[in-house]
Each structure stands twice: as structure tokens, then as C-alpha cells.
Image (cartoon, rainbow, N blue to C red; front, side):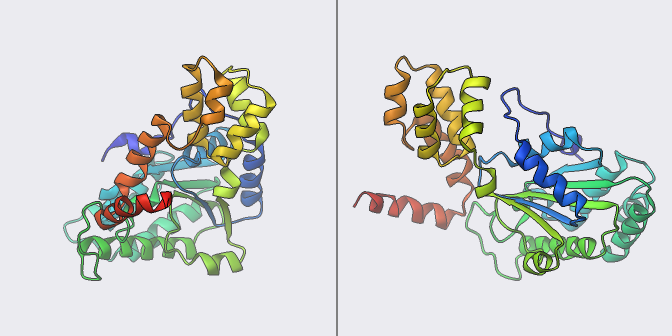
Length: 300
């Protein structure tokens, strides 16, 4: 296992305090929501928000930063079990032992033993799965390969979600589950929402408001922008945090800040590079080809 995937990411020096969202997460915990879903595209500060909140929380936290290889169910649950053992070695001991046996028992029976371990623990617990979208076998292909029902990666990721649904359905009262993702996972969200089991934050919640934008540029980056310039940047980026941070990077090297802000757009080289690396390159090959072929239609 890669041990750094179990580390809670430290707050960045340029992080902006987000008390309105911290309050909403605290409210979800107080109201006993089983599942906390933070779902938004790249660059909306999902991981940073959770790190900030955990720093103020009293919950014992197990963290797993996921990648594409974790679509294998046994690998996924081994990471989850090891993350819980960072809290207490007694947690998930049966799950780890079963996964390491030459002939592992059925996975649901092992997860049942995990649930019993967690329910017997006296402290409130939190499991965070960061970047869950990376194990969605139907969307994470960059080579355009077959994603039919018989494809091993799709079958594996389906089993990950089926078994994780089992954990949510039988979640002990002292456990809360938090997911950070760029796309909604197949975890019966509509049913959980109707039952009051779900607390969710989305792009509309995560985008910076005017006060947070001002805090970034003037309190954190010390750019001394006028209120008019701040409002213009907020409107041009629609509060997209990565866009605002990249604008700040460009402003630090700009001699005429007001002129730069007046002409600022998605053509900025930092934003173009970010979108290429974090958005376009992560799409399946057919989607990349379609976007490149139709991009010129926006100019018609």
C-alpha cells in the first residue's frame, strides 16, 4: 500500500476560511446524516474544504485518497481497513485478515465484520474517500476502451459501489461517511436524499462569493484590488476557485492590474493549461476527439 494515500492533506498556505460551509458540514453531522457528498468539477476546493473542516472537528478520521487502481474491490477495502487502523489497531482486523487469506471469504461477510468492529467502537468516526470518481469504471478511461458489462474494470468498480452501498445501509450510528468526487457515484443518492440520510455540497455551494473572493485577493495574496475589480473577477469566473487562484497568479506578474482584469478570460494561459491537464486529458479518448472537433463551433 502507498501510505501517503492515507494522509489527510495539509491546508495550503493560501487557503481561504469558509465558515458558511463548515457550518453546513457540522449541521450534517449533528443531524445524523450517514453520507456527506461533496460533488463538483475540478478546481472547486473540495479537498481543501474537507481538510479545513477536519482540522476543526473532533471526529476520529480515516482518510483514503483514491486512484484508478483502487477499482479492484479487495484493494479498495484493504485501503479502507488500513485507514481505520490508523485510528485504532483493533478496527478492521478481521477484514484485513480475511483479505490476506489464501481463499478470502465473501466480501460482504468481511465488511459485516468491519461494521461490527466500528459499531463497538466508543468514539465517533469519519471515513473520507477523496477522488471517488477515479474508480468509476464507466467514466475514467482515457483510452476509449470497451466499457461493456463484461469489461473487468467495470465489473470491479460495480462491486466496489455495491459493497460500499452495503456499508452505508448498515452504517453504525457513530460512523459518518464523506465522499469527494467530480461526478455523482451510483450510491442510491435519490433514496438516501428522500430518507434524510444525505448531506450534500455541490458546485453552487462551493463557488466563492464576493467576500471570499476579496479575502483571497486582498487578505491572502495582498493584491489590493478594488471592489469593482473583485466583483468583475468573481463574475468572469463564476466563483470557480481554481480560476480565481490562477487569475491571482497572473495578476502577481501584471503591471496594470485593472487592464488585465478587463481582458481576463478562459484564454489566460494558466487557465488553459489547467483545463487541458485536469479536464480534457481525463476524458475518454472519444470525448476528447469530439470536444476538439466541435470546439470551433463555439465561434460560429
